[in-house]
Amino acid sequence: MFVAAAVGWAFVVVAAPYAADHVSGGQAGRTLAALPYAIGAVICHQRPERSFALWGHQLPVCARCTGLYVGTCLAVFAWPFRLRLQKVAPDFGAAARALSLAAIPTIATLAYEWLTGDAPSNAVRAISALPLGAAIALVVLTAADDRVN
Image (cartoon, rainbow, N blue to C red; front, top):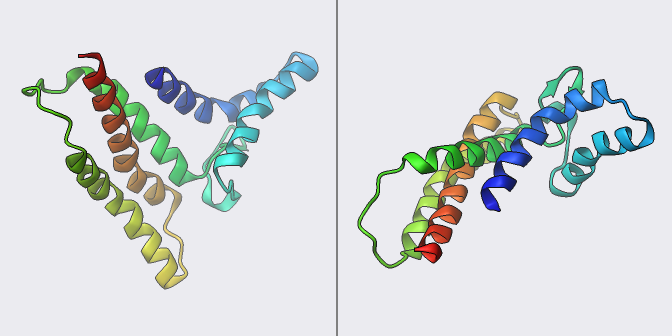
């Protein structure tokens, strides 16, 4: 379920502007096209100057959130190619360290922004969030894999 949600949401985030621009189907079509933006409003500030735009429409989440979701999706696709290591008991300390390290680029951009008052570009904000999104996915997938095996 996590894999479907990670891949599906990353697709929806990028496809929503296209749907907003090419919607048909009356009220039902407009409602369906608006749904990602309504969900995005709950989880993200959606500031236009901090968001990417495609097809003349803003994505439903900001650049940093886009990076998190794309990072999660990329990790899901990379998961089947991971090295099979010897099975050991789950090490939640290692997971916490991995998440902490992966958060460093995002924290660095936030610190830069707060200390200087200057916002990094949307590309920098998105790229800095990729490792954190990937680490979150890897922790979830590792935990799920451990429960299955």
